[in-house]
Image (tube, rainbow over all chains, first blue to last red; front, side, top):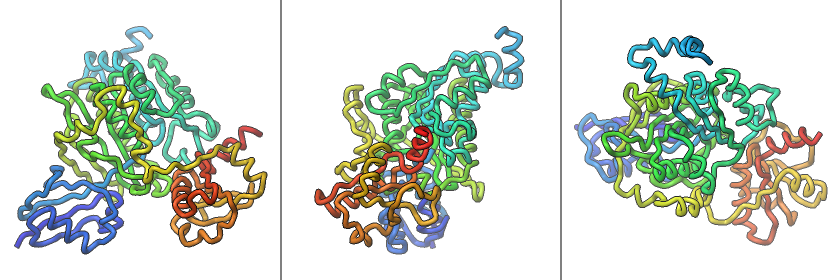
Length: 77
Length: 375
């Protein structure tokens, strides 16, 4: 069984909580699709995705025990 | 200042292993531009001034307000209503008379950015909106300047050093992280979301630290990295950034192209223009007594407005209550003018040209300050 930890930052914490664990997801696209089903409000949010801290811009395959982080932009100063 | 005094002032960092006189000399010869003298700008300015940066520029077009004081620790109640950049220099010059300050009491725009940036080695971005952040980023890339970035939201902060020369290439910039600006309303601002006063103190101090390291070549920079810190649980996380090929095509290639890029428009939700009015125009509409004046803040938000009669319809329920607005002219206001601009856009979409819709620029906060000044 594959285990993936997901971390949420900023405003996304209000939508999905600070973190959660998802099993048996093999790619970032699949993971995002499942997250959007679970948290419909996520569809309206803008964020970038990082797998094991590395920011990605295309669909990326996931490995067992990897961490996916979702980071929205901040503008406050 | 003679050499003895110079030595005494910087003694604690001169004796620091791995720092010393050479690093101090680099600070004394460096010039840094700080964008925004707010929550992040205050600690950045304090520590850079104390550390002995030779020349510091400050860009800020805002005035000190009471609601700033819980986090903008350079200012005090006597300064309310006065330009932040002027007040900052008054305080900072007392701290270190050797620093040469240049004040830009104006908003950073696509027109003035290139000229202002050209006079400085390092740019520090402590601004509070996406239009300015993308402008600062693009101007730094265009002019090959390193940019120290910090941003905050509620209990979290981010720090990075963008576009710094390392191993014969420039490190990732803000557009490698977020290629396109979010539209207005997609992301909360400080007035809506709130911020704990100490957070910009922590993040701003980290920005000052990265700036000092960058200038002196000390330690490892947050280049190709984005550091995040959460004040609630003390968790930190370091994202690893890489340059993207597409980024270059998003950044204006020349100073002329930058001047023609409308950053405010890129960050606004629709192309339709909000009619903003200043305090004077607002007062004359109020005096006429024919318009609907609407406070779109949440109930119980301060300051309470008793100076003129108005309705209260919070922004999030405005759509349901547009039937209340029977007047031909509607003026909306909030604390800072941001939410009322959104409200005006919603009303524009609803009523089109059938009504005149205005938003009070700078919000009730600025209006109250200007009332005080005219008295």
